[in-house]
Length: 197
Image (cartoon, rainbow, N blue to C red; front, top):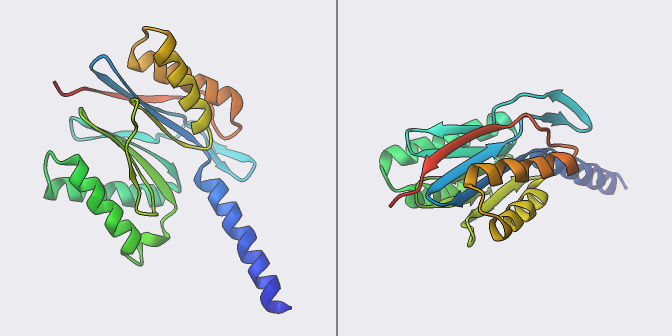
């Protein structure tokens, strides 16, 4: 009986942490030579908003942008590891992301980190997860976090039906996500890079 109760409590705790992990929205859009990454500023603990203006999108050097969903401390640890991989493999974002994903999945310490990363440069966009995934979009749109389905759908519709640029599409898609997702606000942070020619 006690073992079942412990198992049930552990299951609830895992469910809570997985909800907290995704409580944000970050989107990246590529169009017409521009790459735009936009993230909201809301930090939530359960159903409480504890900060409305966090910075979840940042620049890594001159030509790489990264955003995160999940635990801030865990995400910064992963971003530091990614920066280290980029120093070891300069100009090779793909290789650095794959090396980080391998380490994230196999390292005992990193495996416990609760975050997802969205990373882009002038050529590629990737989502990195603790499962060892390095995912790349087929249409130039990728999002992470609890509002990602709304933002992705809005961005894809705007890509197909308008001539808006990457920045306008990303911001409009984030506005849709902020309207629909209680864990996403409209205090956006944006970073852009030029696509490689």
